[in-house]
Length: 356
Image 1 (tube, helix red, strand yellow):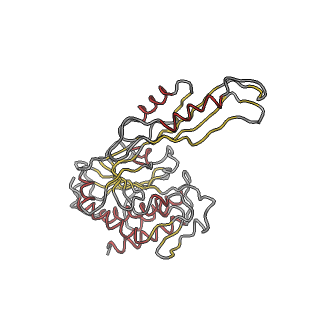
Image 2 (cartoon, rainbow, N blue to C red):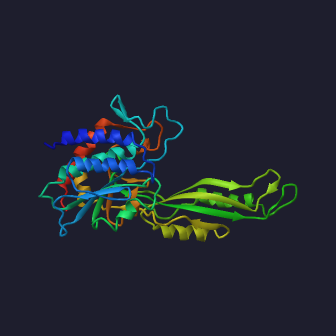
Image 3 (spheres, one colour):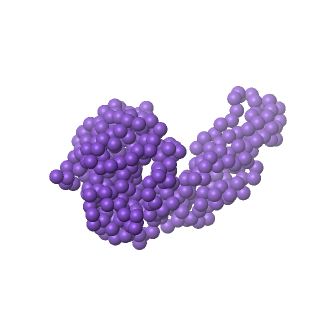
């Protein structure tokens, strides 16, 4: 008999197997097979597109609205601070250790367990689509974005990322800028009133001090951060060009293109190039039935500064999952076993209570 307890046990075992199977972005072949094996074990028909694995509930009905359950099975590469084997899934003091355990393996297996719980239900007022997606960490072209023309049309989504099972009802977008500043190259011993490094100082000060006018109730201010600088090759030569990289986290008061236009207008003496404007902010109304079902269980709402696959969705979406975002991409990553147990129970309760 398929109970929540048995599903939870199976989900934790799956997470251990996922941790033990390297799945860096664009290299998720083996973990995709593990997701396939889950569906096979529960006799659920599924589909695979590249390294994305997806399925719909048994009683899918085109006349109903469709809810997407999505999380990713790729990981970043382990950093040099690890003291434990990142691929050794083991439990110590209630913590399940391993690369991808928190980001976002715990979310993935919890959503998969919830989907499996509801797969056979005939009384659902909506459809369910599950997608275990690839290339989230690299914002690659073969991830969830590649699935939107393949899966049924989505009306609302839960994206599984570690939120301590609170409701991230808005998420900042991202634009990365390459900015080039130019000057006159010269020998360091000679006068030069057009030294590119000095020309860059007011630009860096503007990046540090500028405040975008609109502040979001849920996401706060637009956050602009200078993250990389590169110029010069030797001590006695003034270079002709300085290059910098600026990371801009965009709130839901602006489109990414609006931010691009503002920065270009404010920095006329620099060459400003956005790498992409596709990763826009996302949100869902506080009175949406999905949010209401979560807050009725005592879950809090907040705005998230971190990016997820929500950025590629055009429908209302909610970020929600077990684990803690501050553990993501850290050495000796872990998730508490009780967080997975709680996550599965809350996902199921929300899906039971939602009134679409």
